[in-house]
Amino acid sequence: MPVSPPHSPAPAPSRRELNKAATRHAITDATMGLLRSKGPGNFTVEDIAEAAGISRRTFFNYFGSTEAAIASVTFGFLDTALQQFRLRPATEPILESARAALVELADPMTVAPIAELYSMGQTNPQLSRSELEAWDHCTVQIIDAARERFAQSAGVEIDELYLRALAGSIISCGKAAMDVWFARCGGALTPASLSTLRQLLIDSMSLLGSGFATPAAAPAAQPTATPSPDRH
Image (cartoon, rainbow, N blue to C red; front, side, top):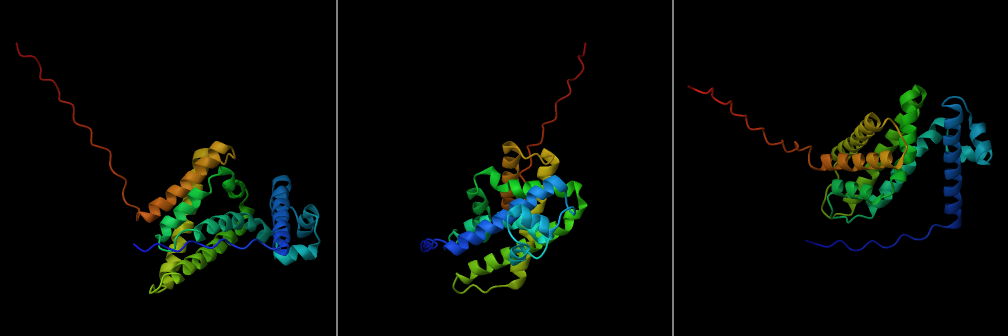
């Protein structure tokens, strides 16, 4: 089997890139802080800008609305996972790479922001718009990452239906993992609860990769013989 060439280390980010990342992070942190203290729909772009220590104009250089800033919480997790995905060998099955990328996010706290946002959305319907925007963005990002992967494989034709069905399936599995986590753990943000969510996300990719093979059935219990009545 051909061995994929090792990936070249990514160039170190420039000072400008680091400053932009820091500003984006400050906006996201400020948005989450306002969500916790005021609730969705009860703060403005100006409130976020003030909390982040930036101007209103700078805010709009990064996000077009408060909803977009809220959705960026989910984007941050996805971007981290996709960074790991892109480090996987180009010859590896794509769903195996997706699962491995999640395994590499060993610290359960990596899922804390999306877990907290999801939990808020369960009791605040106003967050549904931001959630939909976030999932749509994630779908596009996954399609782009999968397209990049196939472009690395010579002779592999890129099928748009495959890409879109794949991305939609991954998103649906991610949502299912979040639903099960919330039902089991009630949205708790403890290390144990977040570890459960991380494992559910990994397991959902395993299910998708296996084609949702039916789990092995437990051995059927042997019927207990009914003792015959004594004959005298």
